[in-house]
Amino acid sequence: MSDRRTQAERRTKSIGQLIDATIDAIADVGYHRTSLNEICSRAGISRGGLFRHFDSRLDLVVAAAEEVGRRHAARFSALREAGAIVDAADAVRFARDEIRDRINTVWFELLVAARTEPELRERLAPVAEALLSELEVLGLQIADQYRVDPALARLVGTSLIHMFDGEAIFRATYPRPDLEQDRMDTLISIAGKLPRQPRT
Image (cartoon, rainbow, N blue to C red; front, side, top):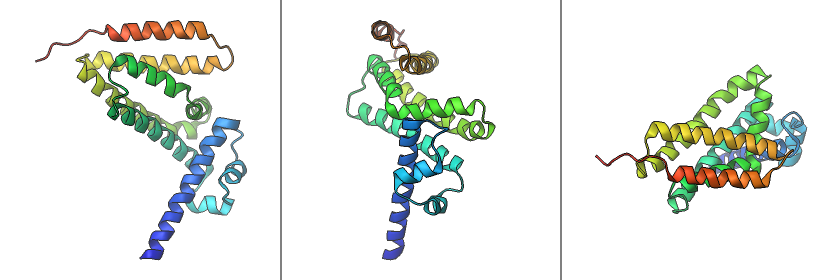
């Protein structure tokens, strides 16, 4: 029993190392340059070891995308439980910070690649849907707390995500910090003025 548990722990550790290495590689060198050799070198695991846990590079990439989604959702939940996200303005700041985070580069790389790679697009679609659905649920919990209409909160939340995605991509090539700050100030002001529903 103890030996089986040790094997399971080793397996979990190896999978974690491979996923972390994939995330780091995509963030550092891009999706197309993230080869199996690159991943294995970063993880300190042989190709044979990799294939004991994943059937293909695509399987590993999808697992990395799922992990990025889990980390985003877990961070949102942890901050909210700690009282760091208490209103719409905090949620707006969180969304922008997370989208600008280095780890989110993985999503940008994969979404662009998926546009022209049907198999990646097919595998990534449910992962993206699950991530956005989970973030919507978390956002709607804040909306309910402040009596914001759920449909309006969902529209505003998804619009902010797409806006910040575009901002994050462009700022690497054409940063506009003054405009970005003005945008944030305006969005926070608007978020504080969203119409509230009466308590029933």
